[in-house]
Length: 100
Image 1 (cartoon, rainbow, N blue to C red):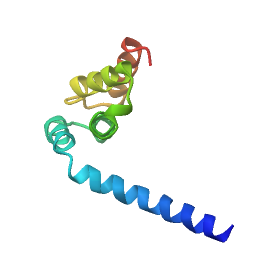
Image 2 (tube, helix red, strand yellow):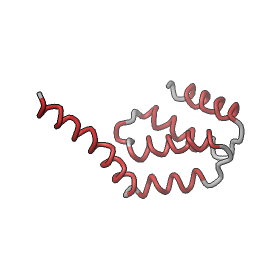
Image 3 (cartoon, rainbow, N blue to C red):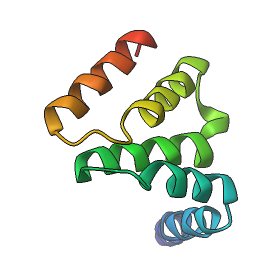
């Protein structure tokens, strides 16, 4: 039992480090962040943009087509939004358009 716990713990601890390493060597992700966050007007919008860049360029192979379309919608429409209400409305519209 003790060996299993140690193995599980080492795998769990190694996973986030490998994810960080992958993100630093991903030029598409970096370009998404640089392009989409350059005109960001709110921290809420910036978080959602960052989440969409991450989904598309770090986990894109696992996304369904409608999920990819949702994240593209977010990236196309949140870049210059200032208020939280507008961010929420755009997120809802992107979800509705892409059956999320």
